[in-house]
Image (cartoon, rainbow over all chains, first blue to last red; front, side):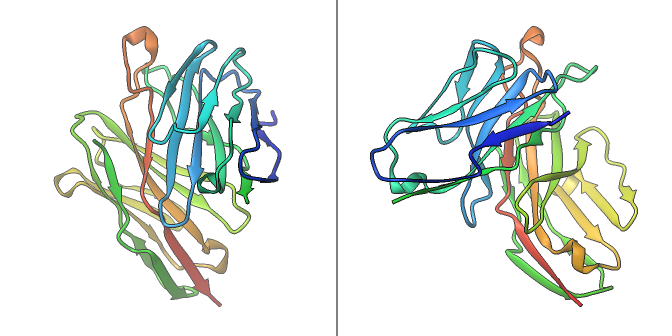
Length: 116
Length: 123
């Protein structure tokens, strides 16, 4: 298994540009999520999905859109990039255990985004 | 609202020293999970441990050990005989019970992270 993959690894955008960060997992996990990591703030949840066609907002959703058309893919869209979105973005996936609760999340390698 | 506090921003030790990373959490849930993740200089996030709120047994895995105390809402992480390869940022995280949609859950296991502790182990 490749696990959770993210592309690109690095990206530089100009203010106002749009782009999509790709995330894919091959573990058939129901749950996928996006976090951003900023210095001194840990990771904060942007959006998450519990299955194809189901998404919801996390702690810091403004400026980002998501969709989940397949179990495998969970892209994150920046509609109009702003310098405040300069960050490292992590995608994660998880699965329901036998107990009926979600297990630990598996993280992708991250995308480092700079918005000028 | 959930909150995780890692009061130690940076810790510096010399190889072979023991080091404890503190984690204090807040939640109103009675069922929750606590995690530790390691982020080495390469940047990926590596899962270390998950602990259920109803299991207060301490756990040891090689040089790593975890002390979970519900009474003080703490989940501390100790590295014994530290090594240079332990140098990393360590994150403590809290998750609500995260029941799946078929069970009617709404929290879906969302993680709340602490700010992270930068551990530097010098040779």
